[in-house]
Image 1 (cartoon, protein in one colour):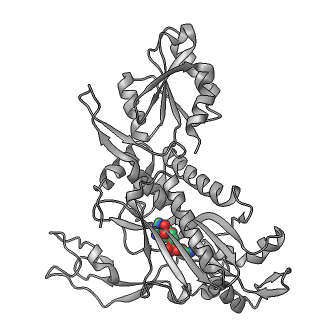
Image 2 (tube, protein in one colour; image 1 turned 90 degrees about the vertical axis):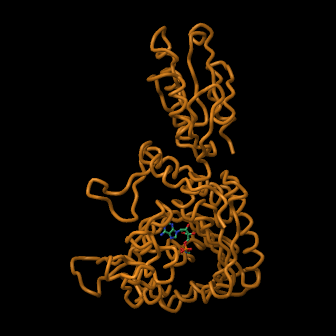
Image 3 (cartoon, rainbow, N blue to C red; image 1 turned 180 degrees about the vertical axis):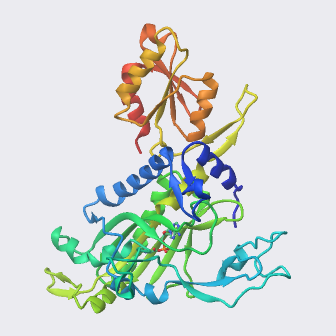
Length: 448
Ligand code: GAP
């Protein structure tokens, strides 16, 4: 059950107004369930991806990075089972021409008024359910014929499986070890809406950890805990995070165990999956061995034995975590002594798109010149903003709304003693410090 308020409409509007996220091809009426990241959104998502890469690749000796191609050999998807089985059951309504997932009718809304679930109006005429493959198809080469069909990958994971031995041998890794990558994936989703929660083009951050069979459940437990800790360190509130265990009915036929990390998006969306942690056994490597006729075994030199490793997968959506971080951060509050309240994005400083903004209090007395000098000193170290228009209160509000953790003001005193004030977004406390100390002051506050 969701316990949090619904802030989605307000967020969609803020994201557009302040340059985080725009509807794709908006001037043509938009593309369904596809979004573009604007100047602040691209920084926010990049910061989230960097945190993941640092935690999963840079800080560990036993995980290697990879950037595999989106277009893979079509046999990959036969081996994975996606050509035959990556389907959703679909129904059409002959009256309103709406198209809905047959297994999610209770979550869908018929366009007829009053708002009800599809099939609930007398006029609704739903067709029989038919299976709809979620993979986008295209053609490779000049001829548009069935022999040249390729797919836009619906998950990044398979690029890792087919490169298992390339990475293991070139990097002289020993099992247990992992391969991680961040990249685009594509699914022709039927269910639309909920902003960037479920989109047709999205980014995944996936890691496959190859282990000796028999040690898999131990590693599964470890990765489950590590991934939850990562979401907490990102600043997502503990009360908004929960594990959801896949029961027998939900578990894929090859999966030995599966948990989702779920986040409470508030309102009717409530708790939803943001990451899956799966024990996939040897399913993928065995399938690729069979379909490619190439051995994908690991040779354990120490014990002189060969085996197909089991795989623990951690799979998280970069866009879904970006949405979770935005929902988690959004707050409206009153300010003591002021009539107008403020909207704040209380983002973890490490993912805030702008780390500090610099304001001259007035446009005279050398203040803009000093402020611009500080901007030039700091901008290669931190993403910065400079603003000299409007009252200082308005300038603070503009930065609060996009989550800037620090605002630096150059005032009358600054030009005489070279000190500035630094205001903290959350506590509103102001420190007066020497301008020459700003770089180390901000660096210390932004770690973690
Ligand atoms: N390789 C396993 C895999 O792809 P998944 O549960 O289908 O598993 C993993 O996807 C994660 O990818 C999800 O937890 C979610 O964060 C993200 N994801 C999946 N489909 C998505 C979509 N249509 N839009 C945005 N994110 C999506």
